[in-house]
Image (tube, rainbow over all chains, first blue to last red; front, side, top):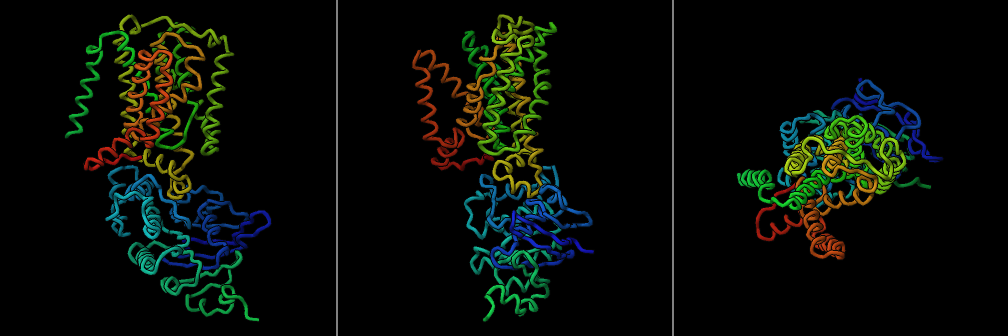
Length: 240
Length: 315
């Protein structure tokens, strides 16, 4: 029984096929990376799963029910969290309030929501910035806030769009550490979208899916995928 | 502790005000200020918290006012029933308006609300059998609306305090945070489980109903309604000004804005005769130039200059 099962998912924008009959699955507690060059369709896949775009065809089964046609907030309520490639902090609110809004998905009680928010700030190591304004944070922390806000809704699966882009090496290391702890400490499945073949990202992944031109090019254990000639060709071009 | 002291001082002042200011004109100004405190605060729930800038709130005010007037003229009941009937009439209209207009975002939503305001004004102007058309409706005084202004003062005080109190409750609740999330970014809000359409409709419903209550009070106080008085675009703009000048999305903002703008507009009218609007305009420009976040934002910055830790207001 898979937590998430995507079957023949297709999305056309006019004549452009952004996602082409894609199928994959994620089990509970699994960390999966979707890698692929810029324009491969990673963000579109996330937008389809979270209801920001309507699928042209295909099914998205999560926890036994089809998500196609559901609204974004319903999908969030069903247990899928997400972050955005271009981070979207709630600018006028503090770090704590950003996470608090997420926590209200789990409870209507203010004190309970505050407790959840503080717990998540602790888990994501943002407690020291609790009262800072969200729009003043550097990119690395804004990405982490994005993750924290999503975590506060209590997801079973979290989709991380371009987790690594724009991060410096030490920030990347922290981000990877955090993704690992999602699985190990909280049992939350994650699908991480990553543009480049980064050994570090692959190292924490149970499975890697390679997308190119909206199609699945390869899938497998990280070391298998990294040595797959077709994957290398997709990134570097074919030798003549 | 200090906050409690301020609040009790304010409460005593508000309760004693009609006896400190016994002139009928002063009491009239106090009533106007409180009416606009209620209107600015009610608008702020939708415009400030949820960030949906409505320029059509005169429609809800006018419908509230006409509810009171029509009840009195058609049924012979006391026009005070309008305070209950106003929101009941407004609520379905607001929900239909919201259901249509919330498909639009930003300036398009604002333009649509202007259209709503104009449509309601034109309906009131032309539906003569019900509204008296351009002639308007004269209301026979009933109950408290006699010669003394004091009863009306206490009624509008209750309306204003209840509206501000509700804003305070909302600002600290799940509803308030959801509205602020919608204001900041609707996509983010959706991604963390906020049903943006539903919560915008809730904000509009509360905001419009409270505005209708204020409108019904107005009809009882002035005992006359016609479309140019209770339904003009200028009224919608004036309501928005209270909140913007005071500080959008803060509980104290519309209160401070209404006190400053209503008091100064009355003072200027008496002191500068024909030039009063010129001076009023200059005051607005100065506030916008030097306090772009409104009075609450300006006060916070000044407090910051003197080294006091500024109290954060969710804005």
